Length: 259
Image (tube, rainbow, N blue to C red; front, side, top):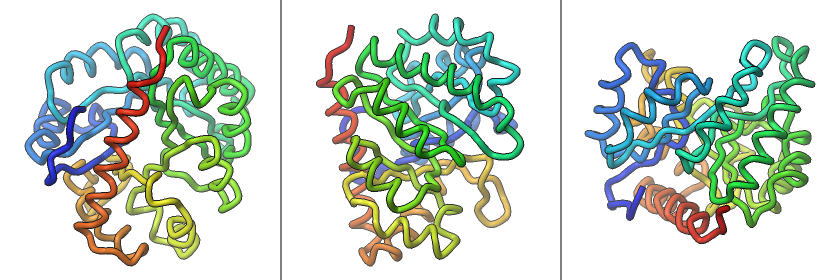
């Protein structure tokens, strides 16, 4: 991801490999000029994602080990470590303490700690992090195991409190916002509290919908308009802010030391 043209959008969290036609989904993101972070849920998905995005201009792949899959996939952590030198981007990773996944939380914590430690050792990584019902623990772990001078974190679909958000800002986190997050009054209130220079957009497609269809990277233009209304700025101004934020994030991390 180099200098962002004025018309480009930002989708910093999308599961392009979960659409019916993976290659076509990448092609549509490219055609729409959306800087897209194509997250993965398991290290075994990395080689194909990496191969399809090695020469794209707007789409990059991230190396993930999704917390919801850790109970079955913890054994793939060594494979994740093997692939880590191939990428600057890591995700989807994190913790999920929701009712369906709470029983694996201890394993999730061990895996997430190792991911943070390895990323800190490598330096220069950008993480997109899942934190369902676990924001304080995620922030504790970031503070202990992923120093700000070693990389950066974008909190995906953040649902923590305003206090959590202030703490996340203090340790350098960004927030990727999708349309579903601001459907509720609580979500809009939280969005209004976030610093303008820490906001990015995401779709989390295909897990969100626009007009009854799975959201795709091009749909972030709708989200930009929704965020702009909440923050009382024009959509054009919000688009400029988002592009500037991504550019700042990428440049800042590129200046950090790597092993």
